[in-house]
Amino acid sequence: MSVVFVHVSDIHFGQEKGDDRVHIHDDVKQQLISDARHVVSNLANGVAHGILVTGDIAHSGTKAEYDSAGEWLDELASSIGAEIHCVQMVPGNHDLDRSKLSLSGKAILDHIRKGGPEEYERVMNNAVDRAALFARFEDYGNFSFGYNCPLNDVGVFASEMEVNLAPGRSIRFIRLNSSLLCHGEERDEDPELMIGARQFIIPRDNGVENVILVHHPLSWYKDQEQVRQYIRSRARVFISGHEHDPKVSVDSVEQGCDVLMLAAGATVPYHSDDVYTFTYNIIEFDWDEEIDGLSVTIHPRAWNPHRTCFENDDKRLGGKDPNYRLNSPNFRVAPRPQLALPSSPIQPKLTEDEDTIPLATGIEKTPAETSKKGKKCMPSVSASESYEIARLRFFRDLFEGERLRILVELGALSENFNERMNQGIERKLLDLLVREGKLEGIEKMIDQLISDRKEEAK
Image 1 (tube, helix red, strand yellow):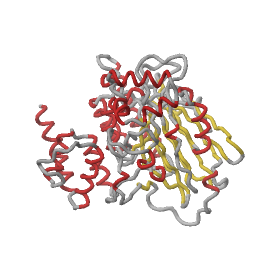
Image 2: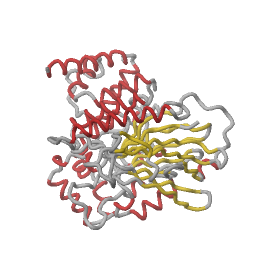
Image 3: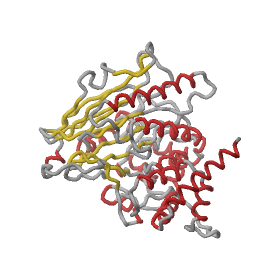
Image 4: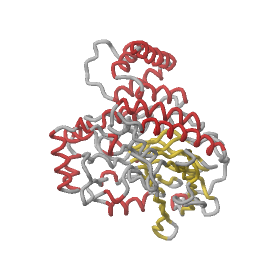
């Protein structure tokens, strides 16, 4: 059974400030929602399983831009039959707030760019230096945390979603942060970014093929050759954004092993012309029983400026025959599927080990501690849709003071609590309330706080 995701990249909410393009871009985003609904409804299952976002959700990395993005993503998810929390995202260079770059942070960036892997590793081993870099992602971090896509604050990869294609055959989304060393100036002649060896710990499991989500293509990294070699050994699909130029290729690593390299166009580029226009993709992942491999079908959509709507893009990303059959060594080493598919393809990661909950920047943990078995896990609470949506709204839609009010009034915190709060502690306390059967109370308070805020704004 195929699983379907709508793939958007480089949406740049907020780039139209003081510009009449805001009307055009708003129309394009609404037309995308309508187009995605139509295309998905005509696929085998009639609904999508989620949304993939490969960076540059915002234009300046501010909360107001993410508020707009959240409303749009909710509407898009609803139109394609997906739950609003089923979004996988990575940050782009526009998802950091450049105004929050301190003088020490700038000095750290210059130090790493003039150096290389050794300087990068030395900085990432220091919690204070890391905090100076991650401070720019504050609003993105709050936004992505609600979607259970937390930034890994020690610089290793992150993974919270695995999707079943058939019994014993699944794909796992791996999120890489390629934007940590971005500084906002024009690109130098030579690549200046790095993925870093500490992200080279992606798991290899029988029956599971990895799908990499990252913002920058390989050519932007100083360590691109090391990244290329590692990706070819650990992943079947590599999806990037940033360059606004849709491309796809399949690299044959060796006999019986392929990697699909997909570079996205921009969903909302600065302007649309014959070269760069509004684009997005609908991607089907499936198990290819004949070759016991991964099947990837891309439905590329591009804006037609004359008809002012999206239509099939038959010139790029495979054109009229966009199916790619990938030889998948991790599938072949697992037993052949024999049983019927489970009812839900998406399997959230659950564990009772609360120490593996992702913590906010400033909490010292080693990469091994933060990524046991190659992933960070959710606490042991109900995986119901109501919990997932409540968690999304709690972190994405509420201010810090509003979240603390819920935790205090429902009994997770005492009123004289005076320790430093961070996302990891908030998540533990929220899950504690859920375990105590207070999910309905959380939902009611979220609704009331948002309603009160809107009334005060009138």
